[in-house]
Image (cartoon, rainbow, N blue to C red; front, top):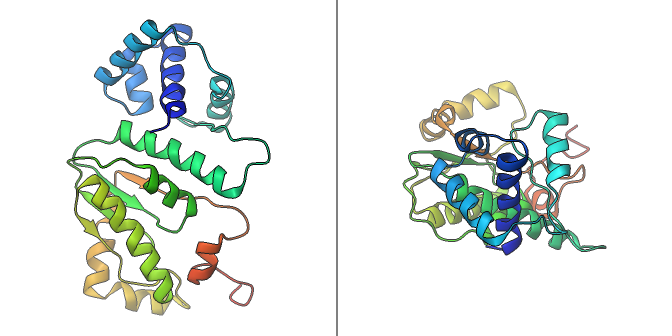
Length: 227
């Protein structure tokens, strides 16, 4: 995991404890971390004399959290004139570090699966011997390419977390309500849909206004003709 991701979390925890005077238990609850993890990070911050480096932005993160009512915002740093790939890799690395530090036993992880940034997150993850309930695909695919790409991403995440997988054997866009109801009545689809209410953490890519090449090639979005 990139050192920058570790520094970012250390600065955030130290700021909440020493500047905002939150208790360790409050920090743990806010950031979805264990209290023992927070304690270890604070001890490490004292030993290392933590000072926010230039590529960590605690004040900006706090402003975003307050403006939009978010429990936690993470701002990543990229070079000037960074490519789309560099931006996705930076976000993916930060997301991977977030997932690795806040993952809990017995959680069911949902993944929307249609996101180049989520793919970058999975690429940055280290193998974990977690006790997760599993990884479940939250979004269907369209066509051979769409189904294959979504399935691979979901299965790769489950393999890294060493847990079971539930795939959604359906397309994501239906042409009518009756088509949707017919598909939902399929036993294999219904079994997966029934687990949606059990999802503890959903990983979703928001994306740009224009669809990425991955999404566009999948047929998994509303094109002009469909609209």
